[in-house]
Length: 299
Image (tube, rainbow, N blue to C red):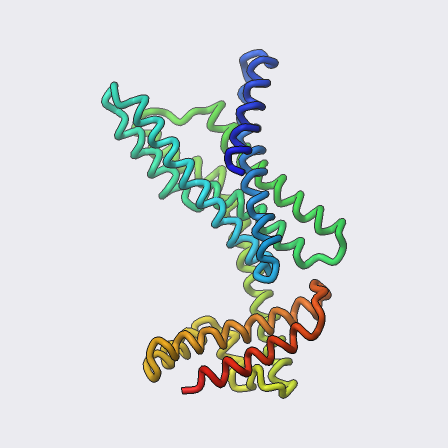
């Protein structure tokens, strides 16, 4: 997939070089090709994750997490490529180590999240939002919007870098920080806002569905467990108490029980919103699995 994106980008650049007169048009075309083809390649990876792990892809929160993970992986491989390439080219001049070190800092420290992780998280956010929309038209619009915003964010960075290169001086060290904050910062902030809103919405829905399940009396979720399951910190605290009382095995068994209970709550949420078409029997099977895990987790 990455090779396909690189091939497409190379082909685009070759056509542009042979078609356009050297100047702003060619420079803008090269900047746009990187943003478009790289984001298309990474976005397809997120789409594949959605198709393969549909049951684990609940909403915008999961979309952002999976998208950022794909972006981080791409950023790591691109960092290695730039570091080794610049080191090989500039080593005869004695500045290969400095150039490689700057690439590592700019990409793996300063731009770790304010770069490819942000761009692909925007794509993931679009896919996550589409997961919860009712009509196919709305889903397509949400996904396309995520791709377009990611491509625009990437293009804006590459275009500015192309037309206004960073100075090779001490001021350049300050400039790269300012540019990252000004150019990528707003997009990263948008991702953070979407993530916080998604987490709040997910938390409310989770608590509501856990409360409804506990009120049903099936035994999969007990009333006393609702507040614990709705809080990540309290869930972790319960697991630590299980570890203290029953060792690692008790910790693992309780973790499996809590995970299944949360899966049931999310299953109820998606069913209530008519986002899944699996038979109701699947929900009943999950309750039976939880009751089995509850017996195993007793200590």
